Amino acid sequence: MKELSDPVLLDNVTHKNLRVITRSGKAFGDSVNLVPVFPPEFGDVQREYPILLRKEKEGGYQALALLGFDAGENLFLEGDRWQASYIPGVIARGPFMIGFQQWERDGELLREPVIHVDMNSPRIRDGGEEGEPVFLPYGGNSPYLERIAAILRAIHQGVTVSKTMYAALESLGLIEPVNIQIEIHRDQHYDLQGYFTIADEKLAELRGDALEELNRAGFLEGAFLLRASLNNVKKLIEMKRRKIIGRTSGG
Image (cartoon, rainbow, N blue to C red):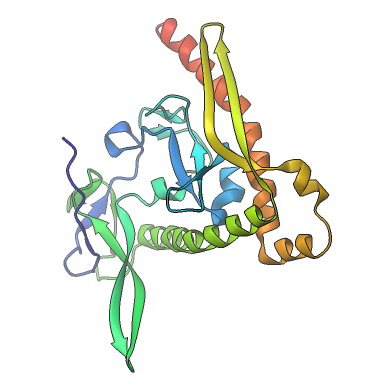
């Protein structure tokens, strides 16, 4: 049974000896075929993974990087190695997440994003030599923690940007359903339904103020990256075929 997460506020006194295992692996929850991604990382994501949009129950869309065709299948995961030049931020952040501290100033309630750590994560080590140190010996942030902080900032920014970006694209009719039919071999097919992508013909026809506003907001590049990422479906098909061949040959 999977342990429930135990997020606590990270501090350099309580967690002075904290270390984090950074290698990849099934034991760390990396065996997933879909992972949320956000506009600030689209440039890196689209070089490796197809990006699909999923409509959320509460409205709006969530971008997802496709890592495999079966539930729990990550074609990029080989043992303890993630075979790609970029790991999506939601995975790369490890046991860390953003929380908020609230306080009142001049009658106004303020919220500040702060780093929390899941102490029940299998990546956590308290002392020892295994893993990356979170803090320096005298309390400063380690280079690893600085990288994590940057990843969390990008995710936090991306959550906000996503809502505005997808609303703008949808208002211009630039989001359309996509049905991806895949044949791995004669007896193995996949039909990916319920997802959305960018309507490339409508995007190409965009002119005038609408085009300028999208470009000024930074959403135009994101739209092109989303659409271009679908070229990576072919790459995943080849990875899947190689995996099947390796399994049948005993490799």
